[in-house]
Amino acid sequence: GAMSGLQAMLDMLRWFASTQIRNVAAVAGNIATASPISDMNPVLMALGATVVLGAAGAPPREVPLRDFFKRYRTVDMQPHELICCVRVPDTQGPYEFVRSFKQAKRRDDDISIVNACLRVRLRPSAGGWTIDEVSSAFGGMAPTTSRAKLMEAALQGKEWSEASFDRGYAALAEDLPLPEVVPGGMAAYRQTLAASFVYKFFVGVSVELARLAARGPQ
Image (tube, rainbow, N blue to C red):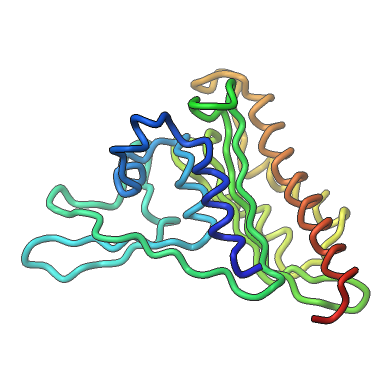
């Protein structure tokens, strides 16, 4: 729904760092450091956020977060630029859903093994729902926060169904391959976590759709 993007951010922030860090940290710093396991970057990327960069004597420029991370710990910023603001579009209508996910070795105050955010906009169709728009972002699966573009393409315009998501899981495996010797190890486990987040997203949104249907026309 209309607040699901904010809720996804709050759900991730709940487990974000220690109290001491939270008291002095800044969202812009977390973005600019470009950690591949940043907890907020997948959420902001999936929501279509942009960063506005400013520098003395130059007009500001706006960069979509999906284009901001160039390679490991490298972003589209010049040494003289600062992040002036982060713009996050509102989620629209009752049929747009956003969920964030994180798996770490501890529940509190621990870095992620894998994290993700998924967003979908649905439209009612004959006997069900059609996926009008889908976006995704994963951390811990590549040197940068990464979209699963093949999975998004596999789901775009398709029926909201288990069969569609079965094709999505197959595409996800191509989007996020990990060699056995990947830094951080646990390659197969991390791939399984990423797929499990997509499955949880499908189940959670399906439950919410059933609730909406039970309520009837608003």
